[in-house]
Length: 238
Image: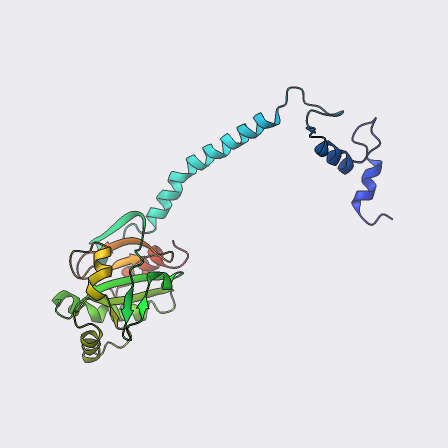
């Protein structure tokens, strides 16, 4: 018994006049730069391999062009219809790369948005002197609790001039323990994203693309908001 199917091909001629089995003949043709479609007992008169490849390539390009708008539309739809509690959101037509401007933790360690790659991010800018920001912080804390395990981080970057000392004191005083003390020195991240007022949260997907921004205070701890964030910037949604 033969140990493989290759041995049996010796008894299966490519044509009635051929005594070679198929693999050897094809290899020989390749060595001699011969086209198997126009050489040998089975021929296709007028066949041009290069011309056929051009046709195939053209068809592939047409298919890609045809489906691209649909893919782009589906991409945009992920962050469409945010709901009434995010009615002031301005969505981007396509993700805008988040600038790699560092911010800092309570120990003055620099952090970049790339450190959160693979996770969605709600990045909120605030200050202790900003009344709407202060009002929003408890809801932002609850949002972080609600998103636990979802792959979405909630970051609150303070632009206070006195930095971590002031921000930490505020969070402790208001018993907000689950939000990290993060500082945007000299409002560098704020300015890099051309944010003109507070509060203005950015919604950043798992690939570091800014999907949109929300202008003004948000009631974060609502089911429609949480569902939207998971759909728009959750892992696997970018």
